[in-house]
Every structure is written in structure tokens, then in C-alpha cells.
Image (cartoon, rainbow, N blue to C red; front, side, top):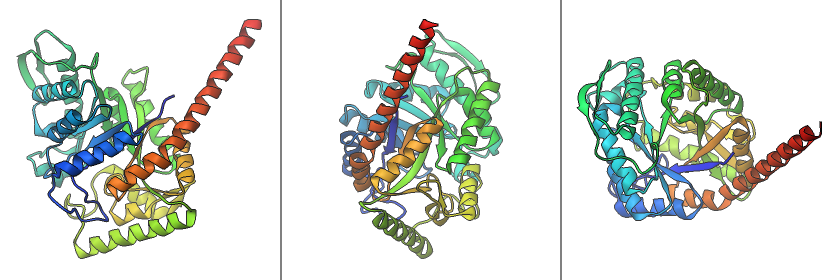
Length: 377
């Protein structure tokens, strides 16, 4: 199966290790980072969502108008707009990008962060609302006759869109989460299910949970699986581990000084994904071929935060281990956003693609041999 690489479409150069050097929305940097991904083998970039951050749809439209191949993954929280409006926004952006849009729907795992924009629903109800929201958006993308809707969270009559996506029948829908409620909602309606990087054994269990939820929802084909990491690479193993320890030291120092924080409310994280990352870090620092958890521990399990540490060859092989589990979208984001995107694109992506091509060719040969042997029986 093909493999795809997802990077980050940050709107400034700040990260857990580096203070941003300019405004929250730095137009020149945003474009420079996107073009670095486009020029170095990445398939798409994520425009993330934060309650106080630059509006990602507008930033995505800007990048879509200034790139030609790079695909866009747009994060969207259902609480910030009505689904019929969002469907038109997404269809328009798919038109601007000439069919390069995927939408990642975020239910929201932190009550404090959700309440910053007026969302006071409890978490399990948010998942149910997201599912209903996605179902409405899909209808608005594909139905050319007016339709009504009366659900638990949305009600309207006689809606008829006059703008439709380039992609037919519609753009893909992405969804993430690590709780039973998330599996049930996302596996029912998503084309892509996004997970944070965990040890191989735990990732395999999550994939099976997503597949089981898809079967329970009556789907014959489960969502594709995406897994996200923070790669830390260097020419030698020793240099990579030195770089990894420097990274964690910097994160700890900036957190202790108040220069960096989760900014999602005080206390332990409420979302299951972050809780899982913290628990895994408490059980050990190193897993499998290259997974390293102190980066997650240092950030309190904030988002995609487990690292893959080593030479480009080691990190490529570690990614292939996840590919062998059935992961075909590999998400990676460094701490020096621009430099790491270029280095990863030059040094890791070609190694993974080459090995995937070899494996696919071998599978094709094996299938041909099996078919030939069957014909002789």
C-alpha cells in the first residue's frame, strides 16, 4: 500500500524549544515552511487549531493559492461554526486548492480550552455532536437537492449548497481520539483515523479497537490509520541521543521559567490520548527500535509529543515498523520546524518510500506466483 507523509503548517517559527521571533501569523514564514514541505517530498501539511491561534482556514487558503502540489489537512472544531456554513467553507477551499483538501475534525479533549470559545458540552456529548456534524457536512458536499435535518444538536430546513468540492464524491474526513467514545464516533464516519505515536504493541491495540468500532458501525472497510511522532535525527546514534537530551533539557527549562506552557488549563490533561502518553512515559523511557518518551513527559503529554530518536536509517526503520502494523500515513514534526522539515524530507522520507516500494513489489510478485500456482492445480 502507498505511504504518505504529513508535516505541520505552522504560522510562526515558535515551538516547545524555540520562542517565536515575530507575530503569531508570520505570512512569509508560513509560506516558506509550506514550500519546504512541498519541495522535500512531503504529501500534506496540517493546519492546526487553537482557541486563540490564527484562523487555520484562512491560512490554508493562502498556502493553497501559493503552492501547486502540497495537500492540505485543515483542523476544524465543530463548536466554532454551523455545519452548513463549514461545508461551504471547505468546498470553497477545495476549489481554491484544486482538490487538495482533507478536513480533520477535532472534538476537543480539554473542557477549559473548549470553554474559551463558548463550548460547555461534556466530552462524550461533544463526540456525538462531532459525528452528527460530519454527517451533515458530507450531505452538504454531495447532495444537490435541498434537504432538511433534525438531530440532537442541529436543526435546519431546506438547505441547498451552491458550491461543491472538486474532489468527487467529496474530500476525505479525518478524526482522532483514544477513548471508546472517540473510537465509536470516528470509526463510523472518518476516512482517516489519527493516533499519537505510542509503542508498537499499544498502537496495534488501538488499530484493532478502531477496526472493531468500524465493524460495529456496519462498515466493511475501516478508516486508514495515521500515527504522529516528533523525530530527532542526527548523523550518528550518539549525536542523535545528545540532541534528544538537549531537546528535553530545553523544554524543561522553558517550562520552568514560564516561557512555554500547555496553555490549555491547569492540572492533569483531561483527554485520553495525553493520559496514555503520560502513563507510557511513567512505565519507561525507551520502547521498540527508537521510541523515546521523555519529550512527552516534559510537555505533560501535550499533543503529538513522543519522539523517534536515531540516525535517518534508524528512524526510517522505526517508521516502517508502524507501516507493517497497517499505518500508511506517517506524521512528523520536529522542534526546529523549518530545518527539521527539510532534513527529514531529504534524509528519512526517501528511505521509507524506497523500502515500501520494495515491499509492495515483493507482495505483487508473491501474489502473481500464488495465482500461477493456483492456475496449475
